[in-house]
Picture 1 (cartoon, rainbow, N blue to C red):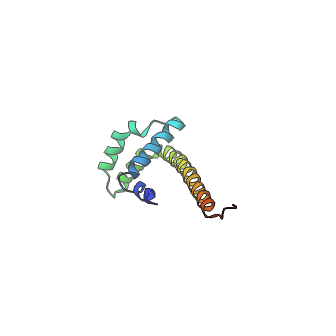
Picture 2: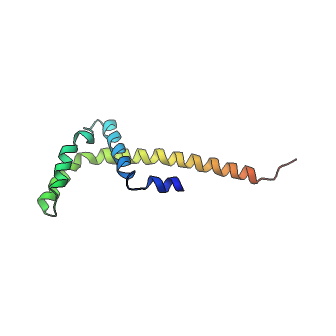
Length: 103
């Protein structure tokens, strides 16, 4: 439980999503987000609540949708399998320790 809390800290979340989006882009053959950093940074710096600014940000971020979706999905699937394996192993060990011995 403590590990789940640590992973959800604000300084891990951007690194996780940057990593899985980068991985999704490379997997799908898209330009990696790390190569788009200047364009994204410029669009976000100029962002305001005007329709034109929002349209510009959406236009710049649109190519990252599928890499983000794919990378996040595969990352969550990978972490979910690990969490399932750890949980099942811990429960089996607990049941084995709690079972009366047949001596």
